[in-house]
Amino acid sequence: MTEQWKFICLHHILITQRLNYKREYHSDQRYEMRVLHAFRMQVFKD
Image (tube, rainbow, N blue to C red; front, side, top):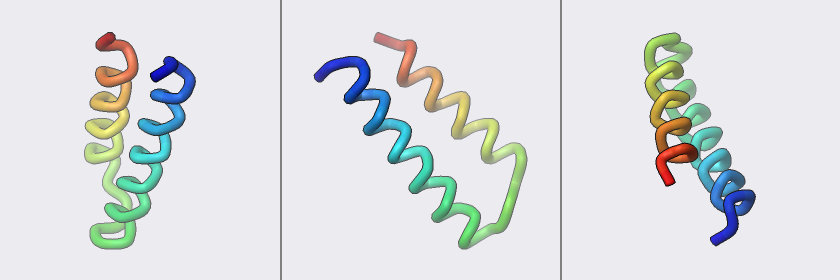
């Protein structure tokens, strides 16, 4: 898998999770920070 493709997949997952979370629990800043942090860890881990 190329880096760009991996980034696109992870970004799609991130957006989907954010939308699902907002639908159920509305906006929560701390949750978004945790998701973004986990996303960065995934991207830069390799």
